[in-house]
Image (cartoon, rainbow, N blue to C red; front, side, top):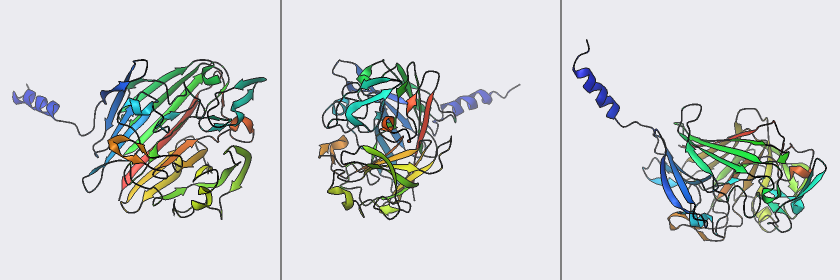
Length: 373
């Protein structure tokens, strides 16, 4: 027979707060112009890290970390409500980008004997999936779902109808964010289609390890595991040729300050770094792609991926937008580290293919891991 105090002990244990969050908290985050509610999910772990995700664009809205000094800092650029994400001030902050991230030349491509015309939104070209119904602008369904390791997470789902923004096929997309005890934010993407269609998804978060709204990211050091990059023309469209990074301003094989050689590109069409690096030794599991460090604080962000390329973009077109917490976002005040395929692959058969066909499943994983020494 159990001791009479045993039941009381069980109740006491059950009442104790757990170190890690069991389920994400959900909040209202405003509405779309059509009146649909935007939801915000809050994930946290026992290291004091909190990640906020929103159903508009399946985006990372905030990433708060607790430093060794006890102060909380937000690492990513964003807005305090849904209205900001639907305004002209939004520069794809934190969103899921697609159907195809990056540029498609002349907003058109041929597939299986048919020509498809896409939305034109970057000069005469197509950028980041389109104008009105690209994945960053639509409202996703969101629900709590743990990761394979039991970490709390949020699963976002969206079905893009055949013909949306000019793309063929009914595309079903899932984006699963999980935050674990190691301070890793993992993003798993899957997609299926009923017609052959190009797909190239990524996350478009802008990072500043000194804190979102800090004046510059040019004091950060970057390492990229790449020997090659995709050459482009003056309109930032890949030419189809690959070039070595060695002995160029794009050589980040060793940790190098972003500001040390950026002047090589600020006076040209790039206005800073906006380059696609071909990553070395890709595997079925996420492997090291690059590392961003901020020496003054000792903070480090390590990026791992299953994708063949990493797009490095130094926020060249920010124009003093007012973002979360009233912070101003200036040119070169953040950097995007976008794991993806090479842009405009539909026009370059030598690049890894971005075509998804019926019966296949698109899969990719990106892991952002934070640390502070």
